[in-house]
Image (cartoon, rainbow, N blue to C red; front, side, top):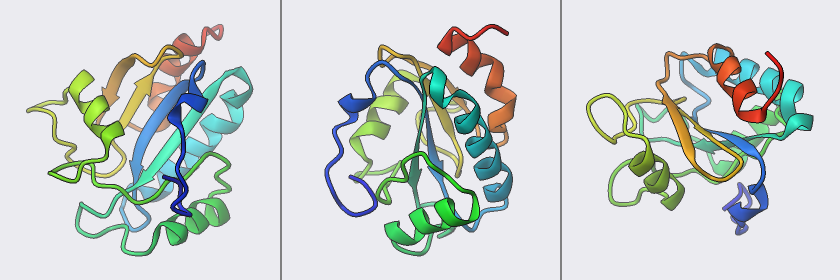
Length: 154
């Protein structure tokens, strides 16, 4: 669901390489990640990159507002043009189905659980989960993987 609680058919992203990220507005990683996500999106959106941002409040309540608050924060402060979805759970019994899929297909160090905000998953144009990156891996650090997935010359 999007930040307005409207259903979103994720099949609309078929044929795009995707970077799926659980985001938070009050995290120490917020500024660098949102800035770099926006930079990557602006640089590669015309080559087929999509970024799907899912606000999550499961880590020290660092996304305390509403889904709309999260969307306004990202779009106003960081000029995000990629979709900001409804707040989700990425762990536990209420885990969002997209995160069940991502975690099942790419486990992290010490298992499936998402450990913190800004965990990133790279998905190819056919929907295969190619890689999982921990929160300390910046978006720009995975630019080469994104370019390879998009088939963009390095």
